[in-house]
Structures are given as structure tokens and as C-alpha cells.
Image (cartoon, rainbow, N blue to C red; front, side, top):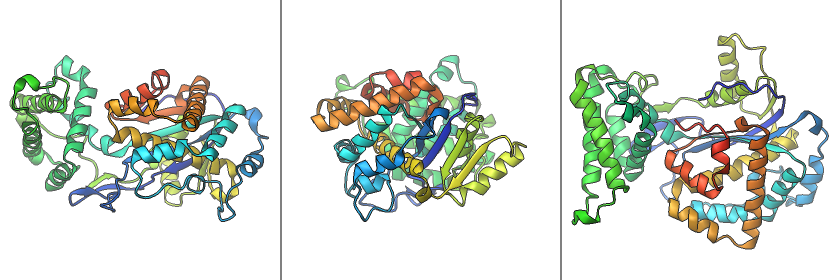
Length: 395
């Protein structure tokens, strides 16, 4: 991730969406895959609003009153304004969100009052697999392979999505991510064979029908990349980057993501939704860095802060948006834009305007760890404007 420090002063309000707190392996699934009838996105979002010093007197009460929330709604939160059904597909969830008048009104209010938003997002399944490719690049990788690392990481994620159950079972068999040196070669051989079995099933009967840019071709190139490591330096092979967490724990906790955002804006004040388990971890990290007094951050109850409640709405909107991109194809995204009704189109324009203004204010307000293929979809959705200007975190 980036270690850039932003000197400008903001008052940043945060809330998170899809906070799984721990990301780990179980038999044939991730710990978040608890409901077989519901597809759970692996994307964690930490987002909110960024106020400049002269914006301390913004009337959030007026915003809340204008939304005319149901009397049963205790707070102005995403789930209280957008009643997503459990069975919604990512496509349906995004359409439903964009078609919500309260979402549109919140976005309009933020645009009209020149309020910036900030977004940090990470695809936890993608993030958890990156070290495999990065470790392999340490062993006699050519310049071309090194420059193509984003491509290989993208291919590996496509392999995961192609057969998630089989991939997770393979990881469990070798105690991933704790791959000790004696297991390094057997693990890579098993992964290579798993990949080969996947692409063999995709080879068309008539090779003239083969798509050089299709999934089969991608997995074949990934297989060649792994095979070269086995042939060139199998005796030296080890997974030093992978080896770090206990078996089955891909991400032990999410505190580092909070630390990253706080340390990126050292001159700013950070107000976060209360997280009893996260705060002590953040405190200990900054103490170990001897920077306990460097950063101004606090965790408070969301019912005591309307700006945090608005931050929850921002985080929820982006969770829905990014879950759709992760689930869709590039062609799906192109068709999605053409299929928006007037209400959805108006909300989308507000969202795009808000993003553009926020990134113009400060590119570091937007940071994402995304699958390269999803970056391309994002650029199509927002016409190349956003990701190129914001320092994205795909690695």
C-alpha cells in the first residue's frame, strides 16, 4: 500500500461496510460464505466524508429531516434508507440503490455543499492471493514477467473464481498461508496441476474457435509462469511472503487498513464508528511505531454523530457498487450504463460528480485494492476519470 502523507487538514468521518473482521479458510469456502443461497462479496469498504476546516457548521440535522426517515429508523444509515432484499443479485442491488430517492438526495446534498467523500476498499480474496504471485516473481522472473505481474495476479483470481471450492480445498491441504519450505514445491505443483485441469476443460473442440484473450488462454499463460518456476529453481523455491499468518487465517484482523488511512492523513482529525476490537489494535500499532501522539483519531458511537451516519451511507453505496463490478463482466457494465432509467441515471450522475470533485480535491481520498479486470470495468463505468487520477492500490 502507499506510504504517501497528505499535508492538508480534514475532518474525516468513517464507517465500514462488509466488515468481516477476520478473513479465513474453512472447508471448501471462506468464513464469510455462511449462507449457501446468498453470494457474499469479499470486498471490505472503509469510507465516509472529508470536511474542510470551513465546513464545521454544516447542517446535518436539516439533511436528516429532509429525508423523512421512517419512525422505526433509529439512525440515518444505509440499511435504513435502502431496504435491500437478501436474495438480490449484485446487479439488482445496484439498480435498487441507484433508484432510491433518499440515496439521490444524500448525494445531491453532498455535491451542493461541496463535501468530499473518501473511500478505501479492498477485495480480501484477491488481496489474500497476491503473495503467491509475488513470491514466484522472486525466482528468476524475466523483466517481461515482472512487468506483467498484474496480469498474472488477475489470472490467479480468475482461477479462484472458476473453482473456488477446489482452490480453497487445495489451500487447506497445504496449510495456507503457512507454507513452510518443505511444502513449497509440492504446493506449487498442486496449484499448477489444479490450474491445468481447469484450462483443459475450457479448450474448444475446434482450436480455430480459441479466444486468445479468453479464460482458457489466461490460465494457460498462468500455468506456463508457474511451470517455469518449477523447472528453473525448484530447489530454491519458498514462499516467504505467504508465510506469515497461522494456517487458514488469510487476514487475522483489519486494523492495518485503518492504520493505513489514518497515517495517510497525519494532519487530519479522524472520527470513526465505534469498534471495540479494532481500537486497541490500532493503538498498539502506533505505540510500536512510537507514534501514539502523532495521530488524532477517536472512535465514537454512531448514534452520537450524524456525519458518521452519512459516512455509513457512503460506505454502503460503494459496497453495492464494487460488489456489482466484482460479479459482472466488462460487457455487463457497458450494458448496465445503457439500461439505466431516468431516476437511476440522475443518481449515477450525482455519484460521478461527487467522486470527480473529491478526487480533484485530493487524489488520496480514493484508494482501492482491486482486481485489474475490475479496474477496467470501473474505468468504463466512470469513463476513465477516476481511477487514473486517484492513486489506486491494485498491486
